[in-house]
Image (cartoon, rainbow, N blue to C red; front, side, top):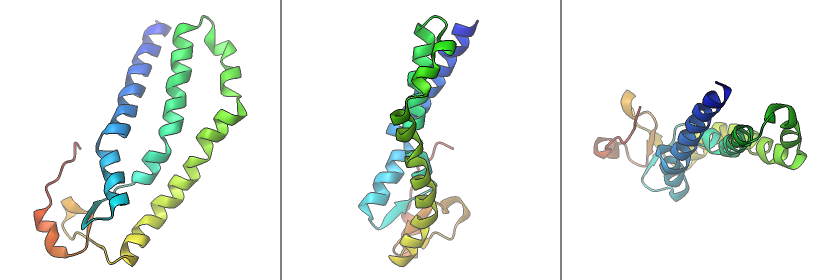
Length: 138
């Protein structure tokens, strides 16, 4: 029964990681880096900074799936200081970036779209809000 739970956890973690790496989050991040006329930004920095932690969780779950008595021996995998630093260093940068990015966008003459359903879009001209085609899953 434990192996079945771990398999579902691996599948869920893998799907979430694929969604972050190839889904709307990465498209938002690319639009933020390109700084075009229309930028979609909705807490992208926090989500991108969580990728190392999710990847490390996936590795630990795979380790637990294929090793007998892995939760007792898994502390060696979890106590590796370099891996913990690899996980923990990006998270504060993501939180700080999430706070700073809207101010940077306002300083670069971007305005937030006034419509409620387009609140995650920043544009150079408010007239561009009419041309936005939403590509959200949620």
